[in-house]
Length: 421
Image (tube, rainbow, N blue to C red; front, side):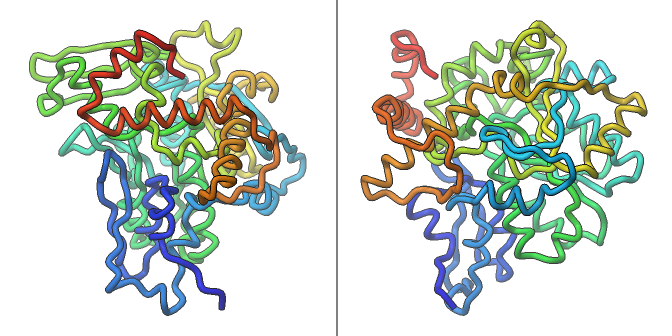
């Protein structure tokens, strides 16, 4: 048997996505997910690790070291009518949609389709639960993955969380849960890790009947929220409610608590800070659309949809089973869906092409410098261009500032001098 490393390899080469799947897959409880430098990271107790005896499960499930998106998509998505695209991967159909419940639609990040669909699935006994992410009741600076089994659980997890998300808590509970049908909702890295994990864990593969992906331009560290609170003079310990995107589309950050009632448009607070608080690994990711998810959900900000101020989702459906369930939910009246041209979808997601070209090129550049990079099988836009290198250097400079709190006063100065993307 060929020897493989454990998750320390991922940490050593700064490839960790913070997904928490390695803790969930470890049969010896040798891995603990901790918060370090504003991120979720695994900590390994080598005295408990059985990698030397041929375990390798943590490395085998790790999305940080890379994943063969094209190969796995061809394995999982084989239904009649499946199509393939260099940017969004394999797909059956693309849609726009929104919840028929105005409150859900207005208070979700885009259109509330994920929230509404999960509620419908639970209420119609199509699933027994869903792994979702909500704010940690002990600290609104943090979030926690949970298994939602009621409408109230789902509603508590609605909308985007611009903060690190780890699935370790929910995965451990899911493994101990009674047999049933569960959906896991996550970012592309979570979905990649789940596909790899389900290839290893037969029992979990029987429980997880669906993977719902959320488009992702890149995660943010916990430091972003901390910076936002400090720069807006908000005491996070006095908050009882925080939302990164609320009150329509694109919405904005809402913070409420003791003598606190704060609102700021999403584009005003988040867009200028994106590179400052990006983890390095996000700059090497090529998967924007969660290409291994049964259904992927996100925004759509092109004409005529961007004129909507309440909320509209775009969706990429890759499975006939989940396509049929989505249409059944729509026929029930709880949500609405309309056909969407694939090219319009891709036009609405500018980061998708950037990931397939600039980020892939950045990885090739770093590889030439002797750095270890994620192993992908995508070939779109492969090549190294000067602007990719310049962009990576600029982003690395921004990230250095964002990861060192004593340098945060410089952020305001830099924002006033340049346009940060």
